[in-house]
Structures are given as structure tokens and as C-alpha cells.
Image 1 (cartoon, one colour):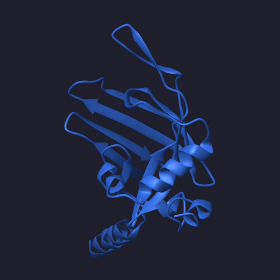
Image 2: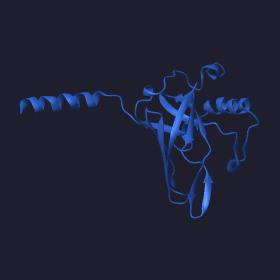
Image 3: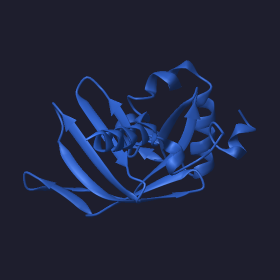
Image 4: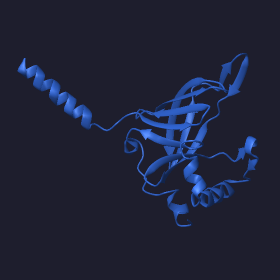
Length: 170
């Protein structure tokens, strides 16, 4: 009996010291909560609950190229109430802000906000300027995903803020 108890204690000890997987990111508002769980095997789970919008649960695979996270959904669209909503590949820049890992969406056109960037340079210049403001911090966890659990070093290590190149311009 003592052997089994000792073995159980050892297993619990190693389990508590193990790096946490999956890595979970979240953004929350008064009306919705969106979670993105990245597993070390290259798969992800994307869930959204909303009091006004559509709830969904989608999954797929991801890759990280340089400091860009690319999500590839399993299906091309999500169907709800006879409507099909496209699910294009989603890309986000992996950033560090005051010790927190943040995913900043690399979208050049946001119709609801009237935002249009003509190229990647304009998008990144806008991000560099936004990063310097107090407004950026308020958007983390609301508009931009914030890591809420898990060990990001299991899938990515980067010690820069925006990117190695753009940190020089901050």
C-alpha cells in the first residue's frame, strides 16, 4: 500500500511541475467571450459564446512562422440558421506587452470600424504607434487575445515586444 501511495505522490508531483498545455488565449466583452486553445500537437480549438452574436466551436491546425500565428480551420465555413459564415485562415502577430503574451490580428480591412490599411507596412506602422499609447493596454483581453493560461514557451519563444525589426522603431 505504501508503494502505491508513494507512486501516486510522485506522479502528482511531476504533474504539478509539468509545463501547462494547452495554451489558452481569451478576449472578453460584456456581450461575448472568445477562447483560443493551442495544443502542442499543432491543433487548436476556437470557441465563442455571445448574448447577441453567434455561438460557435471550431477547430483546426496552426503553424507559427517567424512571430505570426496562422490558424487553419478544419472547415471553410460555419453554418448557423441557414447562413454560412466563412472561416478564412486567421493570422495574428505574437507580441509581448508588459510580460503578457498578446495576439494582435493582422487584418488590413475592418469594415465595422472604418479601418483600411493598403499594405503590411501601413498596418505595422499603425501597430507601432498604437503600442505606445494607453489605449493599447485597454484593448488587451477585449479586442486582442491575451494569454490566460498555459506555457507559451512550449510552442514559441520570443523576447521582443512587437517584433525584432519593429522594436527598433518603438
